[in-house]
Image 1: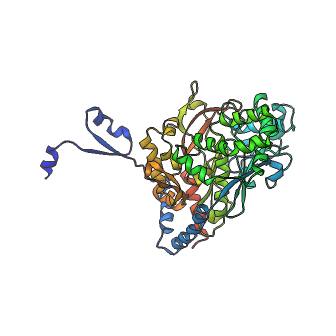
Image 2: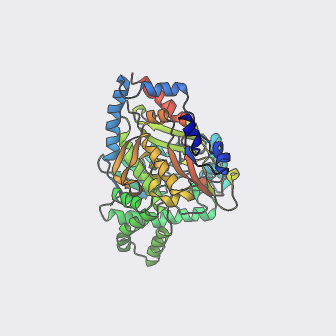
Image 3: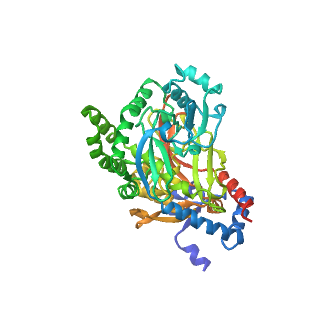
Amino acid sequence: MLRDLLAGPIRVVNVGLEQFASDLRAAGVEVADVEWSPPAAGPCALALADRLESGTTPGDRIDAANREAVDRMLRAEPVLVDVRPADEVVPGMRDRLLLHAGPPVAWDRMCGPMRGEMAGAAVLEGWAGDLDEATRLASGGGIDLAPNHHHDTVGPMTGVTTRSMPVMVVENRTFGNRAFCTLNEGLGKVMRFGGNDADVRARLRWIAEVLGPALGGALRSGNGVALKGIVARGLAAGDEMHQRNVACTGLLLRELAPALARSVDSREALVAILAFIAGNDQFFLNVAMALGKAVADPARGVEHSSLVTAMSRNGTDFGIRLSGTGDRWFTAPVEMPRGLYFPGFTEEDANPDMGDSTIVETVGLGGFAMAAAPAVAGFVGAGSAAEAAGYTRRMYEITLARNAEWTIPALDFAGVPTGIDARRVVASGFAPTINTGIAHREPGVGQVGAGVVRAPMDCFAQALGALAEGVE
């Protein structure tokens, strides 16, 4: 039998790095690659994950809790109901308070673009006359800083939210909770990527004085815009709701346009509003983020549950929360994205990953739904459409359910992978995949690319250890 095997054509399976098989490929040998890497969580975390698996007493308790937590996610009914200034609706919003993306971070540990955005926001609010004065004010403790997530809010990239900024209000009508997110500024040099000059601030003032009030009036004139169906249609049309929102932006505009036409008195203002939304393919991203927060929050606080209710990053730390450990953050150093850069920029210019936008992956969209958006694969450096589908398939390994209302045509209409289980993340070695933009590391420059990043495994190992303490 060995002689017969050696007499036939060489068949090679390569496990691990592609370089292992490069010489064979160069010689014309067909090689099948198997993606594999040593478990990243370490032997202690793997032993803990095994001890908490189904079939053990603590594992069975976690299973029961997870069924309840993920069911709350799946039963959510998010509706966009209003747009209001943050100080009218965001809990705890006050003067001299700046909300930011990610887990808590002090000024002296903030990355460059986040400091730049904080300075720009302070000037926008009139707390400082220029950026230098704003920087001195913030570094000296003259401004309070807090995570968006601590105020039922999310924000993209640097994520700044101030009292005067209009925020979208998404209501989860199943559970009655609300979540908030600022309006998307468009592309280019914008505050969410650390832009803070006069043009950036002028655009934000127009959003606060014209766009926000118009959208709020239009939404209040009806019964809001149900969002679950828009997301479902967006997935069928090639969106994944993180890096591609083209279809959903168009669908939302179609819902809003008649009410805007009825409620906006100035024809010039109406034209500017419609043109702004139609010209911004990422307008729906911020809606999807508020949706994600509204969907995930009711799953918080289920005793013993290992379901992840938030993932977020601030350019310094990556943080997660588990349902069964309440509002406690588990953090690790944030990673650098792998992706494509705009002309003139390289990875040397990039800032580590940041933003609350990972809330969309937390509910099964973004990188978890990459198979629905083959056009995104090349843009974020993921490679082929087949590789994009591979990202989604791996996320099924670490989640608790498939959302039957949000399906992916390319995977025979399988539901998106929903409900990240910290146990499965640690046991499998598959960290959540996140689609993301890439900001320049210096303040004031803006976006320099887009890519894919992994959540740090250590966050999940820490969270699982804390959960285990209360579930024995």
